[in-house]
Length: 254
Ligand SMILES: C[S@@+](CC[C@H](N)C(=O)[O-])C[C@H]1O[C@@H](n2cnc3c(N)ncnc32)[C@H](O)[C@@H]1O
Image (cartoon, rainbow, N blue to C red; front, side):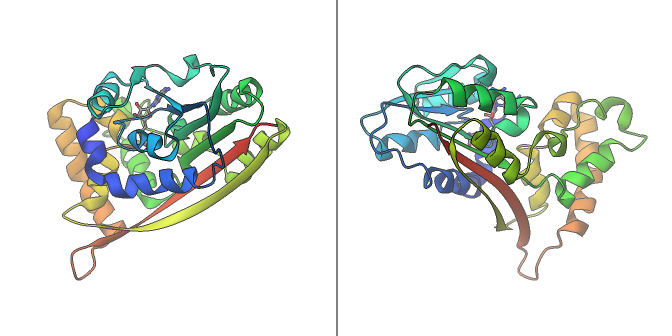
């Protein structure tokens, strides 16, 4: 289950890649703009200011996120990305920080590139930090003898799901698209106690949270906190640097 409030804790840092992704979409007056996996809608709701004449379509597989998006004024619907088909007037489709949760997303990207109308833009962004200590430590702890029986099947293996920028460049180029693919590492300054633990609690730890009862979840977090604190030491001023690599691809259908 997604927790919109927890996810919004870092709305500013999580929002920046969305705008950088959008910055490489050259559509001038698209007829329909679609945000797949729109989450709580805080980013989606900025789209009409860029493209005021477009029909806005948004969906997410989480009813909690869709409720939050609707409350933010976004006409969101509950739908899994696998069930989405582009309407014939879809000129822009965005998916920001979603496809890392979808192991077969390469098949979807190829299908969308084939189904979108000529000249349409398809833009995606996924985290590329699954080799970072934050994720490696979660995987290590979840695979330890005490936790493995419950957590081994649910631990999030984004490293096996997400590709490198050139792989997405190849995928779209092979589909005949123009493509722009790149990566950026954001050096984020986090505040407060256990800031990296709080950050990952809103995303990567979600499947672990869902698999544990309250007492076990508290114990798991208590065991993870010192490991993260050692890997991401606080500065003298109490803030913590957290490097976050992200992967982007923007394709234009021929
Ligand atoms: C990290 S949030 C990103 C939300 C928003 N795009 C943003 O940039 O803030 C990931 C979102 O992907 C959604 N999601 C995960 N798997 C999905 C799927 N198979 N179909 C549709 N949405 C999915 C989740 O419900 C969640 O809202």
